Image (cartoon, one colour):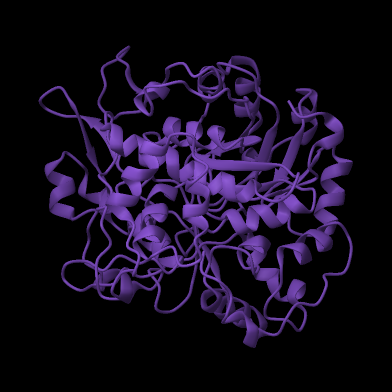
Length: 492
């Protein structure tokens, strides 16, 4: 574990897909705090960057440092388009993940995570972490191994119970096979299916020595923190304590569900984490969810926390993976008071509540939602289930309704479900063009801190990651270039 003296006070949130990209993580890490890349969907993001020609050469520069050249050569041959892709041309898709996938599919996942972490660690002595969702089980072992090959310092995981991850990190650090329990619907009592990964599935020759990164589970209750501290399969190095005001996926409220008139799940006293009891576990912890203010940092420190994790303020800074025009649209709306964030209990196929920014023309709009043909072609949020033949199949509540029902799904589960996989990729300006010509729409997420973004911005419409760090530390954010310069910001 990193020494207490070098623990970060600020953790930059791991916002997928690609919002927490290598540029953002590198900027934050360069200031002595913990920069975090998102590993969610980064394999698809990686091959789309290559298909668009990797115009600045960053992806290929990092690939040149990957320890297994044959993997790099195969990825370039299959996905790299030197002249880029026509605007109306569909991206070539990766095969969707399942319990067992081919060697080439695993290699792309490992390589993509290596590239993102390598670029984030380049050119400074700071610390870099990777954020993965426990709920997206199938790629996680390959993603972790790729990040470890690049020397990642921290692993952060929420959206589920990552009890088996510490032991998997121990095994991967020794270059030995690792496995995780596959959470599949319809298994008999006592029955277990697993996801297995062997580093030798990536490369037959000698494997490099690896360090074991620190592991920080993201939790929303005292009971989960206590259970992980006592019963995880390996060392827990601290916790991120996340409240329901955080962006992206939130933990569901405890107890019987109660909804307000907008359909938002309501949180109560049972959902408040007792930080005194967290402190009694004797491990470092960081407070997240509505933590993007210097007063919240001071309050967290006073409560015994090591610091805070902040996502929303970093999401719209210059270095994040969102294109400049999307950032400008949100920051301008913040100045006019035209921003609303709803905790949508139906949007995510996972069933977890999801924070949705209400912007016209995005998938948050009922019109856009109804007009988009339902499909599932990326598959990260599919649910594994035991099929009638005794094997494992997959379904997604945002796929075509008839398809979902034929697979044994309840039709009620499809109501309001949105294709987050495609929408979050579209957020980065890498939208898929479907066969019928449909261009996948965007769908933005943010924490409740988005409501106070205007106060942070002052008279600006853009800002840097350094501005956020200085603000949280209690200083005054430095002025940044005018909005007109934002249009020339590089693509992620």
